[in-house]
Length: 163
Image 1 (cartoon, rainbow, N blue to C red):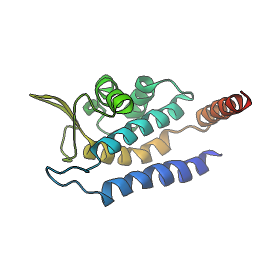
Image 2 (tube, rainbow, N blue to C red):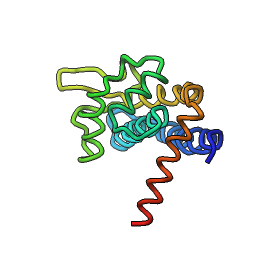
Image 3 (cartoon, one colour):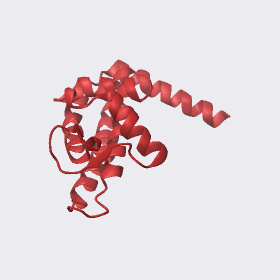
């Protein structure tokens, strides 16, 4: 898949449209269950890791990929401490489906903050910042590095299929 098709189909198609639908069709209601705080946060964290690997040219794990993505594409990178995102939120959600901190959906800043009970991630702010960052990602994605990343992915798929 060439760079433009990847951007149009994967980034601005699947990723952006899915997140917009999640955010817009299931609006948060105060003190109720089903506000998709956890799925929204987990999807965005996974997408940042994935897209960060395209800025690096190779998969490099959560911290390195997300650090690269946030530093290159977010307008407010200081609001997103990568180690807290990894240890408290990503690992908690991905491995236990239980964040090790709170996840709100209030749409307030800063996106990650501390309260008496622990660290909170606002998934509404996270998704909005991420969606805004996609245009910057498009500008930052270099053809050669994109090709390098795609070639590694295709090689990995071929190897797995052969096994």
